[in-house]
Length: 156
Image 1 (tube, rainbow, N blue to C red):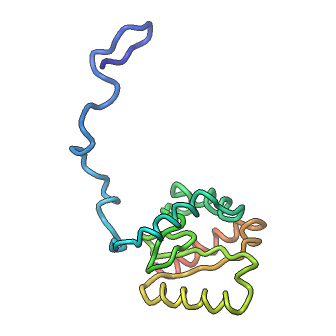
Image 2 (cartoon, rainbow, N blue to C red; image 1 turned 90 degrees about the vertical axis):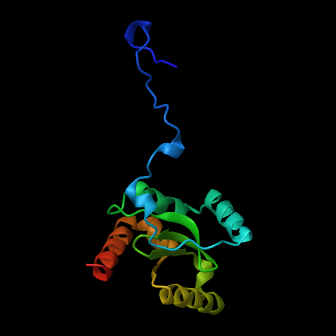
Image 3 (cartoon, rainbow, N blue to C red; image 1 turned 180 degrees about the horizontal axis):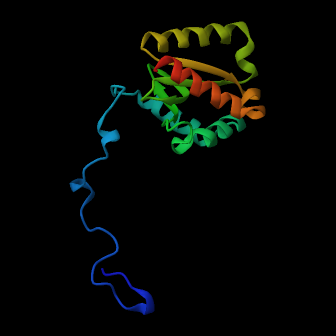
């Protein structure tokens, strides 16, 4: 269907491409998978989807700071299943996991569970960064700077 130019006259060529999406080449970054894709338990996938819809204030603030490659060009994903766990945020291309912890992570049992998760991720080559929710809400700029410094130290 042709588009309309100024004055209501139709264009000779359509404004939108009529090439089917299946015939278009994917951008180079989407063809490369730095993290091998593994089957995800459907319950984990469903739970991750629910968690993406119900973000905490700290998660929302962090997401707004890093989404759309805003943080040094890194592509973050939220509530991503990794190694049987769901991580708060991850940058798969740099193998960085960012966990935002609330007060419930301060008790001994939660701290032990968090250490086990971190150990699992590190064994798979991920760098895990943990921040308290209060740090995110009060000083997001320094949190972002810390992430950038960590990435540059890990991968010069």
